[in-house]
Length: 215
Image (cartoon, rainbow, N blue to C red):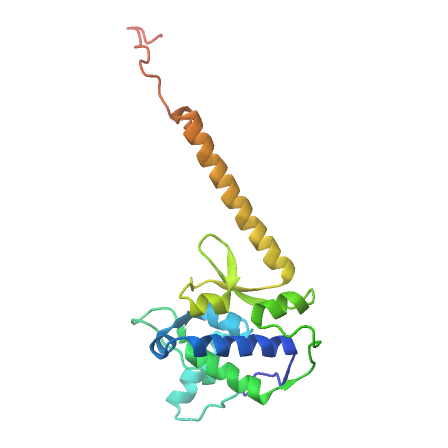
């Protein structure tokens, strides 16, 4: 894993990396240094599989133990930490941003956006993305996907993140909205109909069984 295997990036990818670096730069220094990403959030931002990130972590450990240098272009160059003895691997957002900045600066942009579409971040993606282009999203506790960079800069990270296409994004929103609608409807029906709707209500004065057990 000497390098990322990517020497060129599309304009949308560069926009994505620029957006991340800009969002982090707006954060207060202390917040930026302390904000942690789960391994899945880091892999989504890096646009790699969780398995690739796991292997990079092992490679970093082996190289450090052997006293060898680490290629700055390798994913192994990104430091990670584990809270406690057996805690899950986590990454400082600032370290991930620094790596992406190095990647962006070392890469060539393969295309340019039309002059009429000079938007930032997710707006650029939504305006120009093809059917296969993805954007990193943070999946909130209710299932709603929000821009991962927004979640990062506003303290709304949940530990769960995914890359979604425009269709995936719309589907995820629709599923979340449908679940919320049905939950609200069910609550309203229970409140209007009373406890009998639950199927567990008992009669106020149930008949007593006779001596022979018959009612």
